[in-house]
Image (cartoon, rainbow, N blue to C red; front, side, top):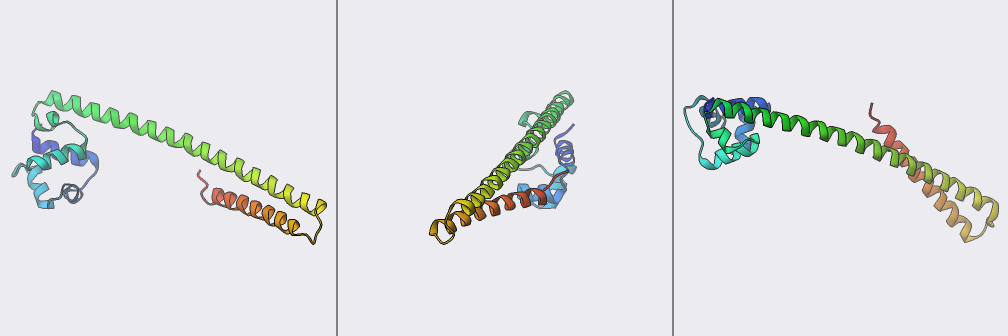
Length: 158
C-alpha cells in the first residue's frame, strides 16, 4: 500500500470526509484529494498531523511494506476495540455507581427532612424562632431530595 493509499484508507476507516480531514490538518479539501490520488505529497508537518489524527506510526505511514501495513492496522484496530470496550464498561459501572449514590442521597435527605419536620412540630413551641428555623431546614432538605429524584427521572436511561 502506497502513502497516498494509506491516507485514503485511514480517512475512510476513521469515517471522515475529505473536508473534515482538511479542516483538522489546516488545508483545503482539494489538497487532501491530491494527497489521496498521489498528485501531491503533504509537507512534513502535515504528515506529523496525519500521524496523530489517524493514530499510526511514521514507519507504517511512510513505508510501502504490506506486511507492516497489516500488522500496524491490526494493532491499531485491536487497541481501539479493546480501549473502546473498556471505556464503555467503565462508563457503565460509573453510571450505575453514581445513580445508586444519588438514590441513597435522595432517600437520606428525604428521611432527615421528614424527621426534622415531625420532630419540630411535636417538640418545639410554635411561636419560637427555632421552630421556623427547623421547619425551614426540613423543607430545604425535602426540596433537595425532590430535585435529585426529578433529575434521576428526567435522565433515566434504558
